[in-house]
Image (cartoon, rainbow, N blue to C red):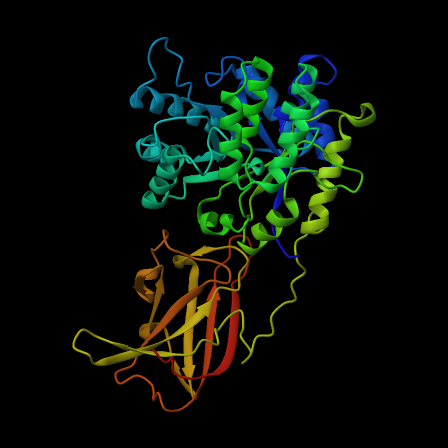
Length: 472
């Protein structure tokens, strides 16, 4: 399955192990790198003191880790702490300033994407769009079951703002929790309910109902049962059940132009390297169909089978291999067969007659490439000629057009700001009143000489092709 989807991992997956002293961040990142994971997703507050105002030695330590293991920072997760002030929510201006500070932090650690989670004023994306563009960092809203679901009006309004702004720096980040087919025992809230003594029959009832109810029916069931119980553990369990969602993976296609990152949530990987509850077999082909070429950042929220903390990560990567191809799975592309003998000096695109403002044909243009491996300023073109059906035209008749600007050969002697780069086409214009006969093919030779930077002699290129008039 040809695709350019890349592999990432969020350090959130290892937060507890690092906090308990069972792993260092270096060990977590190093082991991920050995699995072929190249992109690290960062929750800044897990590593950086005082984030988003980090200490310089923390920035250096993080960059050293990225260099050591050959990885790169691909996303930074943060929240707008809406309730940071007792008795009121943050204002839109205060929220925008929080985003600005995280943008500055992301730019400082060379991180190209930020993922904003939780709840916020949907006007925020319009407010911060210029800041994102100034810092060169993309901002993606997390699409997550429950708190930031597609079903919520504020999220729909935010997505509509992203569409209207049409900025490459604004987008969405789907979390795979939106595609949960089953409620399995490994789900953290199921395990928590069992520990808290919730009636096993209730747990099984809710697991079974999720398989048969529509999402609307399931939410109604959860609400009804919440009203019927006063047990805090049961209420907590039912609230988590109510957050569980499954959407058709094809929904991703309509959002594909705005997807800047993917959160690869998983709770349990079985021995066949399948996630036991999330519809990865449905989602991954849709991402390929839509042309997604960013990262899937593995986010594990589960235990350690047989005490091996990395076995779930290995299985997750093998699952991606199964549906996306062994990583890296870039397709093998055969060089194209070029018809009509295109060359590195003269293009086979054809010739074009040139007209002045009065509509009079004043000459013609052919298209030449610089064969020299380094880009050269036009002042280093030492000589040039165009020969048509045996008639040669020299530098007194020739002009060059590069990047929309045209210079006579005499003017080119002082042009240092416009470059003729390797393989790029320049319009070689010949002053010839009446131009060329467009009804016939012409044998055209382009020959030029360049003064190169370090060779003690000038270097030349020459090619001859039979060219037709370009049809507008």
